[in-house]
Image (cartoon, rainbow, N blue to C red; front, side, top):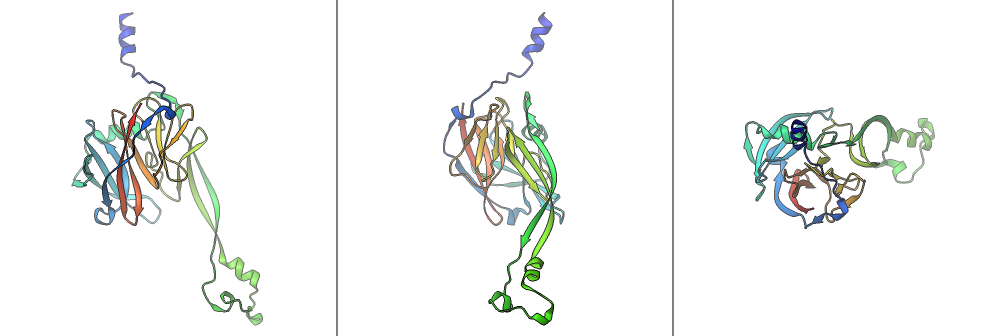
Length: 253
């Protein structure tokens, strides 16, 4: 009996939180990240165990959309200034293990469904000059009709699409790019909640019942990351070419 009670005490307590009941303060802009200087694009964002600093990984992509040449940085949660480090701290892999897992920590049934499919996408090119662009007639001796010219302007392209769904909500999608777990979402360390960039690019939070809470004023969100004590969510906003804003959202439950 004593052994059973001891084993039970070692099981993490997972409380079912309501996303709608969360108290969210206004997100704070902590700092600017210029990947033109750092090289590559952000591919990982992780909190230190004590919640005082953040780890950032940037990576380049090859012609197939696969990441390569990772670089590592540490940032204070107070000012967000990246400082290069040679290797990622040991705690990053442990943090990323639960942050980017397929299911919520301690709640295996709250799981992301991942599908992959091939789609044909049509890209239509508009004429940029010449008689046709100016409204003139097509030369009958050239063997080209208006319909044929328009058909040639349409190009069919096969796309590899990986979609992540949770409670019928899309929490991530990768088109002709490498699937990066945790890039578009981040689990809370407890409580069965997830933060993610929704289809409009806004930061959103969802609980196990599928209740969704959007954070006003956010856009182009990526790499949402809960602090280990679940009181903050750090994330990046893409604000321009090679420019990202590091933001932190205070969360009270």
